[in-house]
Length: 344
Image (tube, rainbow, N blue to C red; front, side, top):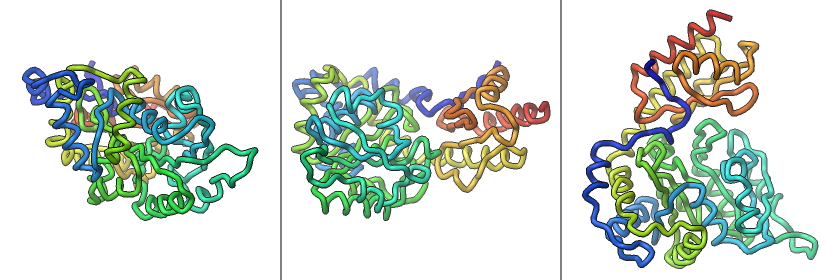
């Protein structure tokens, strides 16, 4: 069976160029700061997002948590969007690792109203935790790949600074935002004190993410990475693939966006619950309500046909396009979607 895997852009396989670069990578001990390939990757990454310095970490979750730990003190409160990855999908790590609690703000497809953020900031009171950090996510995963508007990020950043708070950007897919809007990633990242972005999603590297910020922040973050077990020694073998990801794989994200838009348009024509106007990047959120079917049933029916994707609620599934999904794969998936809807 030919599998069409739309579960996530994390399933991408490294390119041949990445595999060659990994095999030939010049390496050293990165914990000692001696791996030349890691140093090259970190310098490149920092420049691309407009920050002074960067840090290579094993995963996006570790990157986010290193940043929370570096920005906060135990007992603090962190403002997060209610459906954000850092709150929803990271196993309560802020509480476990940093000893901070989350204060959720409900956004619209992940976009928080700046006034709601302002209202969530705690007054000084002996009974209250100290608000020390606001987190943003761009693009927003559970928002269906929504791009946070630059003006929205700017407004929230300015409110945070009025109150002496830092801002962290979970930019796991920040280059999807760049490609979708034409706005350079560094312009989005200007409205955050730290940013994390992934190399192992749409950019197709096998492992790794980047944390970027000021030199002083990265120096402290490096120690927290070590404490969390993220010192990777001869990590240049992995960093080499990350360099290829950043230099060769950014612009091709447009193909994924085009494929996602095609999926959305055709599924809407069939009667699935999709709004093509909401598809800005590489994700398509599909409601099963018009089918009078729960999401798990649709996942199972399509899995049997070799089309894989995940349910994100009892009535919504998420389709994610990526490097290893061709236009032919999209048409193949659409044929099976049409067969399922005709069978109802």
